[in-house]
Amino acid sequence: DTEVTQTPKHLVMGMTNKKSLKCEQHMGHRAMYWYKQKAKKPPELMFVYSYEKLSINESVPSRFSPECPNSSLLNLHLHALQPEDSALYLCASSKIGGTSNEQYFGPGTRLTVT
Amino acid sequence: GQQVMQIPQYQHVQEGEDFTTYCNSSTTLSNIQWYKQRPGGHPVFLIQLVKSGEVKKQKRLTFQFGEAKKNSSLHITATQTTDVGTYFCAGDNSGGSNYKLTFGKGTLLTVNP
Image (cartoon, rainbow over all chains, first blue to last red; front, side, top):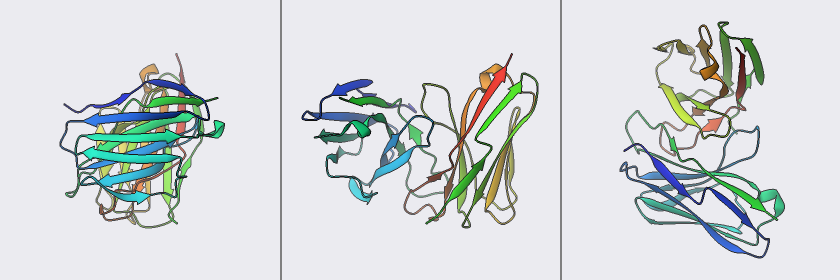
């Protein structure tokens, strides 16, 4: 199974809402990532978890709160977002160590903040 | 910080023509990876290059890593409509230790049938 799944596929939320994005993989990967991608731009790294611990936070505003409950799951909790946060949010996973650290991306959640 | 420049930004070709996209890093890389993102889709891993001067082929796609491990290219021979999408290079200069890839801005390939 080389699949990363993400839910929901689409999300529309108001600026006062609280919502969560979910990501799951069963490849035994111990690194998991959140990226934000705007139209016609490359993915922009937000957070990296390795062995279920937050290892990289790319100075992301606190209205985005990641969580890694176990080695297969990754959540992104959203609160008080701004319209400019509307984007495609991609989850990815990869092995740790060795020479092959390619990332497997999920299909993404397309988020619209109104 | 590390920068990865990718050109061209856009390329439109007639089906059957060749296509090449180039990446150049400001720092020496541990490895470089290539991803393809179809319109409306998500990035899909194509290949990873690790060794200086490495060349790898996947059917009509040829990937090269420069001798100095700072530049790379992807060449597609005889493009097909199924090749349409954005091709991203992504450089890793961490030795694989902190999992952070720096993506180029991507090259959007469109193919006229």
